Length: 106
Image (cartoon, helix red, strand yellow):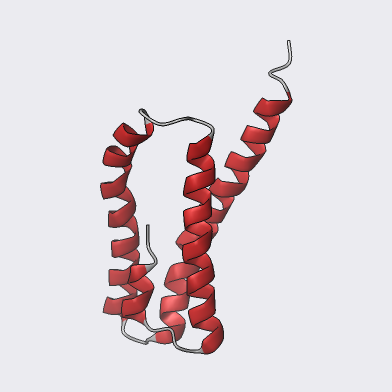
């Protein structure tokens, strides 16, 4: 018995999202090293990124349990895409620096 077409679409979307998260986890410290030579700032940005994810997981998990399961991926991926586009705009215009980059962390 096949899990169905919807399951395949959900799996593919989740896989793409996880790949994007992994790339972000590598790219953000690399961006920080391009902006500054201070290893403390690079480490701080990586720590803020990881800590923010850790602190957000439990409360958001409780909220998500009360929401429609079909809209949650749309909302979360749309929000992440907007923040990533804003960060890309900062990089493209050359106005990026380490402190504003911390604003775009989840």
